[in-house]
Image (cartoon, helix red, strand yellow):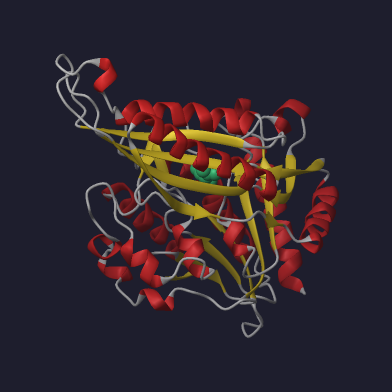
Amino acid sequence: MSIDRLTQELAELALISAHPTPAVTRVLFSPEDLAARKWLLDKAKAAGLLTRIDPVGNLFITLPGSDPELPSIATGSHTDAIPNAGAFDGTVGVLGGLEALRRIRESGDPPRRSIELIMFTAEEPTRFGIGCLGSRMLAGTTSAEEARALTDADGLKLDDLRPPECRGNLEDVALPEGCYEAFVELHIEQGPLLEKEGVPIGLVERIAAPAAFRLRFVGNGGHAGAVLMPDRHDAFLAAAETALLVERAALESGSPDTVGTTGVLRIHPGAINSIPCDVVMEIDFRDTDLDARERAIARIRDGSQEIGARRGVSVEWNVIHSDPPAICSPHLLDTASACATSLGYSHRRMISRAYHDSLFMARLCPTLMIFIPCRNGWSHRPDEYASPEDIGRGVDLLTHTLLELARK
Ligand code: GLV
Ligand code: MN
Ligand code: MN
């Protein structure tokens, strides 16, 4: 089936960006995020689909089934993008989902169960430091109170940023377990395996357990020329030593899947001739093996205290989030496998090292992710790319899987 419409829409959406093409930047509730939401809603309405938005901004686009009392089948992903990202992370799942709903509607044969496409709020952690905000709140993993307390780098909170169309009560976002019969997310792999092996479809069995931490190092500042080296309590150097420990703890965890990244470092006062006195550092740490991850994190936590004590720098350790892995539904894996086989698409089972809204949807209902290849496994960079052919196969499989699930 032609995917010209979808290819065109992916290109159109990529133009709604705070950075020039080919970079894509759409941070939660920025003008670009708001414009992308409106653009998507207009597309959904033009396709004759029903739309609603919840108080945290999750957007729901529904194709009603002939038996609307039955729990729906859901699909979806995100359209927000980290600074200088590409055009395919999340958007393939949202616009691919929209294309699937349109195809099913245009076939003139309504599904038995309703099918709902969800555009989740803030899958990316850019504004508030926490990823999957929308799906976390749907699953009740993050409470309304916790969400209200989130503060961005400019001191703004959710209530300062929420647009008028999602001004409702944040307490109303959480959904009951079993609200959906199934959730299936289409996404680019963000890794190299499918492309390397020439396999067009990955079916995800497990999503790695992500955790993130914010550390604050407070030392003693002063004049970069005047304070002699033995008298210093440089907060940045304590942070730098800790960042090296993050790397060592990941490398030596004993699990091949452990990854640790220090991606944020804010140095105060940030002047070349002033000793850093106050440093905030954020660490992302993940593994498919929860025990290995926890052991490595304990090593970093204890090590950072030792580093701080040795350097006369205080170290405060805050957990941003610490989530267990998600296991995908064996039944959905089998269903999608059978659909892929009937379409003639070879496929393999795999894990997802990136996290996704599926991590939290799996707490509400049986969940599955469908991966398609992306060039060189690149993601979170402007040259991220998935070919129209690969996207087309992913959408074909998503459409068939949704139809199969909605039939029962
Ligand atoms: C999602 O973008 C992640 O960081 O895994
Ligand atoms: Mn991403
Ligand atoms: Mn994503």
